Image (tube, rainbow, N blue to C red; front, side):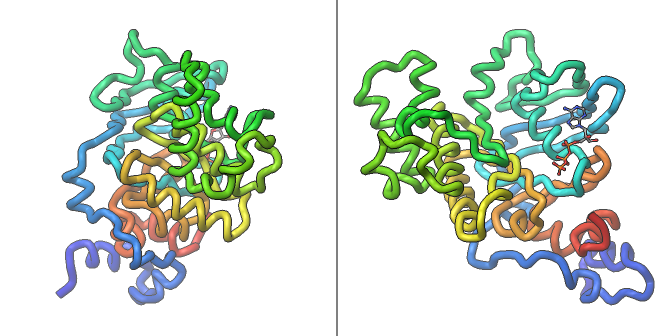
Length: 294
Ligand SMILES: Nc1ncnc2c1ncn2[C@@H]1O[C@H](COP(=O)(O)OP(=O)(O)OP(=O)(O)O)[C@@H](O)[C@H]1O
């Protein structure tokens, strides 16, 4: 018997398309990785709750009435064509857009139950709790060790043994320790691109964040380094809530529990990754994931 969502899905297709044709180009889901089901996502605690969010660059409205719950200790992926607002929305989640002059945000974002725009919010503290990793790795012109210990040092930690302990833990978590443990005092620039990106992840972890935002963290990397980053994202979700922007739908399908599809500044659909890629509810989502546009 056809499920309600399958009926919906079929109804969304052009009359001459068969159900199997329609998803021919949809990304393959990784059956070896355990991802959350729709029910598990519903049951998970919401780490970030976004309600009625509008965002403006001057007169240009980039986001329209976004509502989304980001479940705790899950990976949420943002997908959508270029310019649809993925990165803008990601930067709303740690108020990184505050640094861009002339921007304005309306609506409500809660992190762990607290209003992100509340009068008492210290944005420096906020960005420690909500760490960020960018598309292009950006290590500081310092040693490997100094890169990882930078955040805790700025926060006032001076004890060298403790700093070393944090560095080892974070480099382990970022799956880089074995490769760098004998060269901690080498320049970070002596590392490969993939290693530099893992170093930046270790640096973000060193401030003990709850949430890790990643803006296309593997798009500048070769396939082997990309695969390492994806494995890492998957491992880190036991401890952290992760939000990743990716152009690569296969990557979203491989690493995320929840996927949110954006189009022209609107959040068209969000749901369990397995469901969104197999039985999308909206025609625009289906057209995008089957490669009809974007
Ligand atoms: N600093 C900025 N100033 C003005 N407009 C901006 C700025 N950054 C982004 N925009 C505009 O906001 C809209 C959304 O851009 P955004 O970078 O968030 O999209 P995206 O989906 O992340 O795109 P891409 O996948 O190409 O990175 C676009 O119209 C873009 O031109």
